[in-house]
Length: 392
Image 1: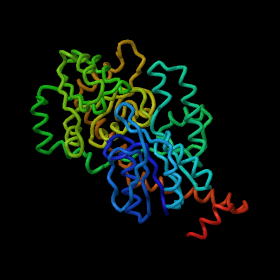
Image 2 (image 1 turned 90 degrees about the horizontal axis):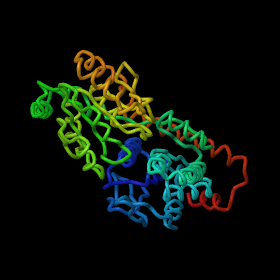
Image 3 (image 1 turned 120 degrees about the horizontal axis):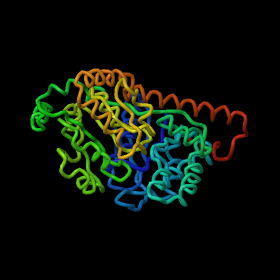
Image 4 (image 1 turned 180 degrees about the horizontal axis):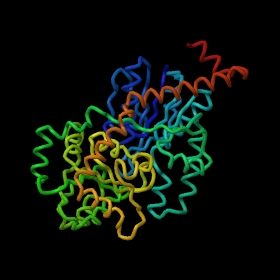
């Protein structure tokens, strides 16, 4: 099939949206499908594998490129004549692509990945929250199907009057993130540097930004025998450093690839702090590495952790984050518990390879294509669809 992937973020910007789009493109190429990428102009490569990448006008907002509506988007869709339009975390650019697809009766899927409404609430922009949901509803209801990554996301979208909806999670690289990495020289040297023979290593991986709430880690102060490791950077770096001042903490900066996999393998416990995750990819990466996870009972983590089996879900509203401290203390004090939960976490993600997850996505493509064909078979052909069929 022919897939037009319209994404609000792409290389060289690296984040959850970019990563999942790249995994989808890799899978489409392996399966022999054709695709193009439409993305905001930000220095992207001209090709990704065999697929052409088209950049459209954009402006920078807090160093993040935001695609602008442009006639070029409609021309690209017309010229490529896709079987389906895939809009990744749609906003201005993805919204325009979905509207164009609807006008042309091209099947479309929107992937919900960013909690925009949560952003307005956190920044005390309550007057904007209803408007944000109005925009999200307008965009996603232009698609034939919206895919959401968690049950919490689906509930929020249903409450906002958005549908139809299906749950589509994220895959994890089960080879890169693997318990055997604990035995490599790189991980062993890192653990030695952190004095893992004397301390239990509690690690955090993620962007240091307000929505990640990494300052919560200060509640772990003075837990006996704990060494904290923070992997990541971002606008809240100095705020987090101030909050953790005086604690035994190592700031590793931003890591990727094999370095990130070895960092996970050096952890004894993984901790996640933010309550606005629509999914929680780092939790899956920690589980794949055989590390127990502690995360808030909110958003995506609710689906990813079996409380008491492969980790713990803490109450993010507990006073002074006492619940977070309680569960981390439990794991720090009990090596057998860490081992059991780490093994259970690895088992939990064994059926979440990117291959299986992307095959599931192709199944959603096929569903909206079939439904569109059924609708069109009962409708007189438009001048556009007649011209398109002649060109094909």
